[in-house]
Amino acid sequence: MQAEGVLQHFYETEVEKRRLKYLLALEDFFQASKDELAEEFRKSFQTICHQLQQQQSLQQKGPIGHITFSMLRTELLEGRHHYLVEGTDEEWFFDLRPILTTYDASWALSFLEQFAEELYLYSKTFMGAITQADIEHIKLKEASHFHQYVISLARYALPDIIRCPEYLALDRDAVVEIRIGEFMDVNEVVYSEDFSSKDIEEIKAWLDQKLEDEYPYEVFSKLNLSGGNYEDLDIRYAFFQKTNLAQSKMRNCLLIGANLRNSQLMDADLSFSTIHEADFSNSQLQGAKFQRAQGASGLTDRQKWEMPGYHPVRFTGANLEGADFELANLRGACFIGANVKNAHFEGANLEKAVFSKEAREYLKLDPFQTASVIWK
Image (cartoon, rainbow, N blue to C red; front, side, top):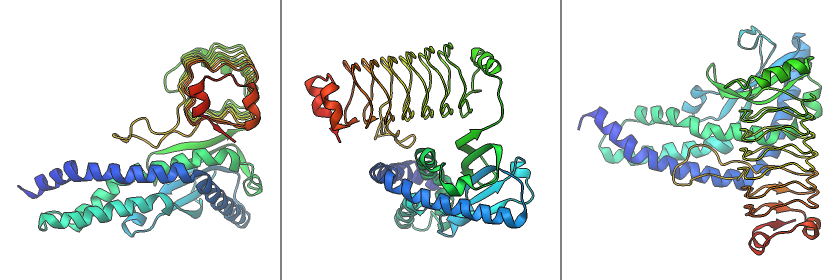
């Protein structure tokens, strides 16, 4: 077998199955430790913001418009796990004087190192047909899978972190995006805020067009969008903090990772919507409908890793009085501090869903549900 064929055989038979082993190990570590990891991320983010603010003062730089975390392949080749963090103005990549610092992502990329080391040791059985350079190439190719956990942690942690004094002390543009990706390559928005003035009627008209790929990651915070027909919209990872969506039709929406904290959704209809990782903390959801909504946490299939497992849907501190969750899949959802008086959970999957002990007297659960939930 020629060298190219040997490498292809090695990749298909060994790399893929060993990748699954280490991604599942990272998944289990991440899900068990994400609150501790979020606290470490908070400390790092505060330090980063402090460094940015100091440099901002020294350089007399204008308002920050982007904070971008970039995985560096050159660092990976040296066995280091530092992301480059750039604070840039509204020009972003074209900012000629970015503010620079770093973030240590060893907690995730150390699993990549272990994976690459196992591949290297096993490659020796191929009698030199697979070289160290081949393993390094595979390592760089595989890094994107492990990198996704850094993105997932940032999305989980930033909504609580963003109010820290160090971030608020930055001179910021009206629109700020925090992004994570690869250096000078594809990156994703993990948090965004937009304090620019918006015309509510224009926003409603735009949403009424039900365009494809236009609304994910957009900022709709602090707007009165009540009574709208937003059915079938793809609004993944969009930001709706302190937004009025009362009595809105939101059936069959893609709401994965949407931030709806402190919002008003009284009598809103979110039936049949996909709500994995959505955050409804401290929102008003009296009479809201979540019938057959899909919001289970964790991996969808441990035999075939596609992305990090979903974080739990968060209803922490929300008012859910009279809300209807009939036949919804809410595995792992967090209801700590929520008002669940007269809420309906008939046929809902509440496996490992977390409720406050005080809520027990108000919940009407079947015996299987009662045994499946966690009381705190």
